[in-house]
Length: 307
Image (cartoon, rainbow, N blue to C red; front, top):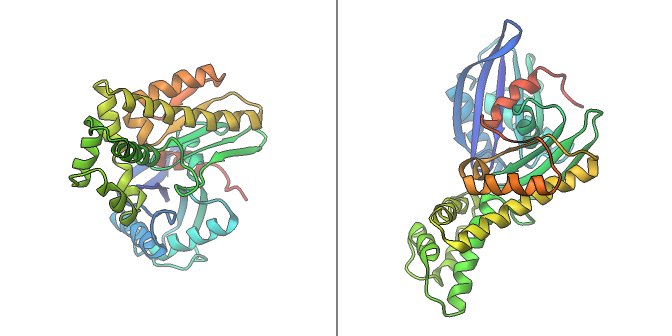
C-alpha cells in the first residue's frame, strides 16, 4: 500500500493507492493543514499529518500493514531535514520510524511536480505559497534556485505577491495618494479602515499562509484592468522564469519545464506571462501541471528510493 503526501505551505494533500495490474490505483484522498515546519511548529506538523492519515484510515497504523510512504515537502534541504520528516510521519502514524513494514521516502516537493508531469528529468517550478525551481538530468545531476523560505526569498510566490500589495498600499499612503481599488481590497480583506494599520497587522500576524491569500485580490484586480496589479503579476512571472533559467543554465538543458502550485494554477495572467517569458528565455516544453502534485508520488513509488 502507498501513502503519498504533498506537504505544501498552505495545505497537506494525501492519498492511498494500491498496486494493481502493474500500476498504482488511487483508492482514497484527503486534505489537511500545512505540515511544513517552515510555516508551522513541529507539533502542529505532526497533528496535520495525523489528521490526513486518520482520514485515510492510517492513524493509528493498523497492525500488520505494509506501507510505503512517499512524501514531498518544501524545506527538505539536508539529510537531517529528511530524517526529521520521516520521524514526524511515523509519529503521526503512531509507530516508530524503524517500524517493520514501514518504508518512507522523503523528497523535496519540487520532485513531485516533475513526477506528476510524468518526467524523471527536467525542470520543476513551484509557484504557490512559496517558490522554488529544481532540475535533474538523466544522469542524476541536480540544481536548484530559490526555495529559501519567505524570510530570505520566495520571490514570485503568492506570499511575495501579497506582501508587495501591502507594501504598495503603504507607499501610496506615505506619498499622500488616495487609496485605489487594490488598496481598498487589501483593507477589506484584513478588516482594516486605514492603510497605516497594515503595519501593525502585518507584524502581529506574520504567518505567511494567512497573507498569501491576498494574491487572489491582485489577480482579480489585474483581470479587470488594474495596471499595477498586472505589473505585479508580471514581476512574479519574471522571478519564476529567472529561477527556472538559472537551473537550466547550471544543468545545460532547456526543458522540459513542469510548473505547478496554487498561484500559477489559479492565475491565468501569471501562467500566460510565464509561458511567454520562458519562451523568450529559451526554455522549451513548458507544461503547467493540471493534476495535483501529490499524484507524483505514484510515479516516484515505482522507482527505487534515492539515497
